[in-house]
Length: 389
Image (tube, rainbow, N blue to C red; front, side, top):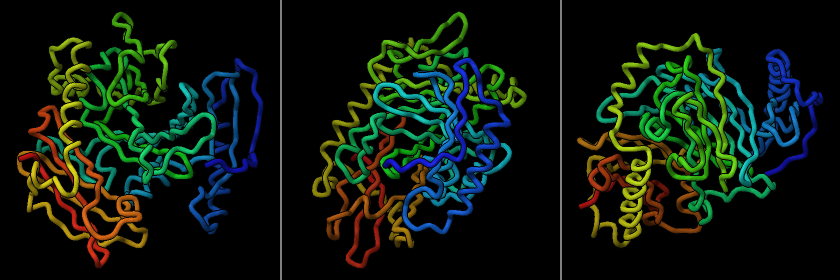
């Protein structure tokens, strides 16, 4: 995971001094020039192996232009989303490169972009096409330098992270990536986990103040963060035993749209449950789904679920070994994505993969969709969605 770091630029600052915008932009410009010169290098390592650090204070949040990591556009290119990669290179994108080391993890918020029609992959919810979105790219790794487990390792399935924008002034239990119709894609590269988190466009709340939380939980954990109902501030709980990073998002307040924000909040139909009841209800629903999913194997899936024939597709891997799928099920919405065939079938012959990605909504089992992938003797992959009987 780690590479030798030859600094492009290293300038020590006093603990009270903050890096200026021009300095950060100059570092980024120089690093990009080096990246362009190194594009012909072979291998899976990032093109630029140098980093420029600007240390603010020992033990504090560090702001720097880091080229130890893939740039946001490079991460999205791995998902074959050239359109989103272009968006991350546009003037509307925000380069952050802020890092926090907490709870045994090192988390870097690389950048974000918001707007309409930014991706090749269409998102939908309840039959509505979601085309005005915010995308944030984070890099997560172990603080001690140990590589994160590869996607083919069993330990990878034990990792759990919750990454979500939060809005100052609004209870994060009720307003987070889940209620904002979010989702994510993940990539493991050189022992670093890259996550692309997406949700409804949050720039409309720029005048309130916005955060991004990263925790080692499945849902928002109010034991990890503190919400001040008087001031609206959201803060980390210092005594929390685990990862509870919190970034302030540098979004221009001029991008705020108070009217659109008010209409959006109204559309969310704020739940009447208390902040303590909501995570408990969500946890119970998740446990129910997990217990049901434990029954499924390639041999038993037909006993508990039925295949939706309209979703069946025969897919041919591309030159990089990926297959892309799309589906739409009446009453259950639609979806799309891609997988690396090797990750699902490494060391295995033809047959159905034992990995079953799944998704569901507040309806629980009644909304559950199980994605299946079956490798054929000819190297093609049959994709199909199953639903509970």
